Length: 239
Image 1: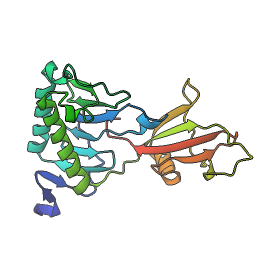
Image 2 (image 1 turned 90 degrees about the vertical axis):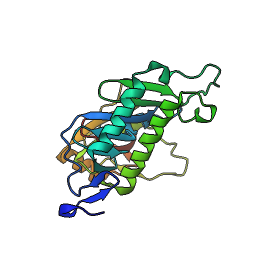
Image 3 (image 1 turned 120 degrees about the vertical axis):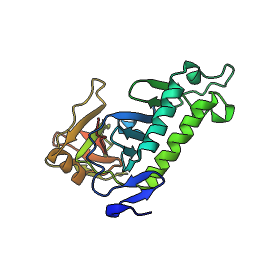
Image 4 (image 1 turned 45 degrees about the horizontal axis):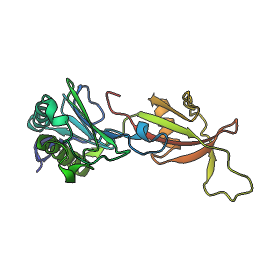
């Protein structure tokens, strides 16, 4: 339904055009999924599935955002605080099967953090207590609401991730398009492992990255001849 001033009210959340990039609150709830058997550079690009801030901003996947009502904001925070305050909720049931290289799930409330292995993968085995799965369901429902009803989240702030690739064999036909590294974009420093690198950039530098690169992996060659795979994602207000 539509409220005063043209606000779109959707089940306790408000889609406020043009304002969702300007949060000034602290994060009071977060839901992340990371790790597992993934390739280099994957985790730095994995945005929190849901982040809720004290001023009411909700951001899903760092792609969509909307303002949440005080009731909705309080419900997810209080549920998470209650679940994480009981350590037994984070213990896997004895006898549950072992899932190798499974991703981890992290819930945060601003005051506490809970990390568990393979939460979603273990669901069919009832490996964790019901309150933890109820929290997962509540977070997933709120994330879907933000993704379906929120506005595009497009701050002038991005994380640029690069992965150094081996030089292709010149006798083999090219399988991907290799572009020149974009002019005006600083190459992130490569980590000590000599393979990956990342940099968080803001303002004009971020806009240059956004103009030159998509959110999916692309392959570039630097002026020194190094072949890099690169991608970027938007940064959350507190990143």
